[in-house]
Length: 176
Length: 256
Image (tube, rainbow over all chains, first blue to last red; front, top):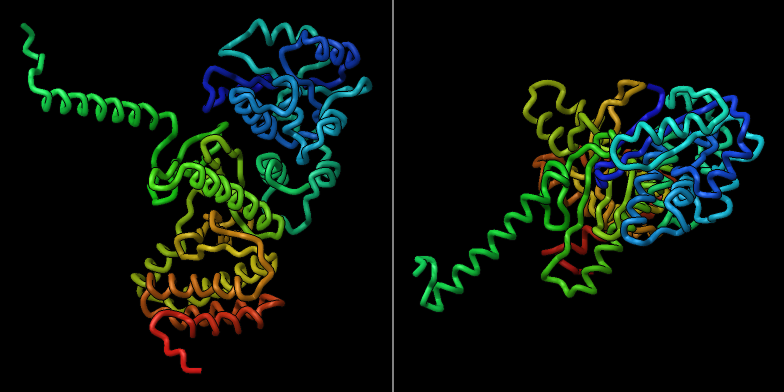
């Protein structure tokens, strides 16, 4: 079982499932499907992801804001991508974290109710690439790029994941 | 005729009150399992322990204070939440350990923080050292040294904690080095200030809390201040202000 599912403790009616693919040949088509709303999920560039927990944090926040009607973007999926950015500029979020037509690796984040084997199967069928375990995302991580984007100074304590998560959680009240 | 019907007004009011209390109690008991295990109930906030997205988490809930005017309460509570979260990131960026913030719910004023598993407060640690027989001075000295260093770094970042006590400092063993790490918590009253007066007051608050909680630790606190002075570039002015503030305290003769 290569995908990773986590039920949101605060919103138990929602479960988040992440799927990771490499050697993807149809990024153009996938992007179009996402824009057309054919995928009930977000497509993320995995080189910007340190750990699946980072995605869970972004998704939890997106679902929370969606529930109280305070999202900054138009859909739950674009909100997930927006939350990944340490700053508050929307177009930059997609540039950095969304996938481009040339990308060969894609992280798919689905938000669904309970177990949905059909949904997962549909997504796997849609992607022309090889599915790999989500935990392998750390082997695709571009740490230098992330450190630069999140402006992590050398003396900051904790891991890169800590630095990223902390910024994601506090960006609404930090001057950036 | 039903036995439950009350003919007396007094009794009717009483039974209605009973229903209200019961539904309140029901509400409270239904809320708790969702929130996690209640660890502490303070005057300002409730602390829960739970799992969040698979990680051990502390939830700090600043509940509404009914004795305050509601608009004022909302503003104050929001500000404290924001200040806490800002100061944590600021400290972490400077290499001062504070719990990672996972999520902030500004609607209910809940902060979801990393649970520093296996930690104890400096307060409890000092108490334990006092109970132990050997090496008291050495242990306390080491701790004082560390505390002085960390606080110096914090003040050099112009972060004033606002509520320095030994209960707001945690000790845990470092994952990599096996050494003891000092973690600062509870930044609700913190703010940014470069003024030596504010930092001096910060240290004064700590001194008062220290000496009242841990009797006969004057020497230890002196060591802490020495370590602080040695570690901070701006410490001279701060210590000077601390001395001034000490003179200002209660029951002090203001003969100039």
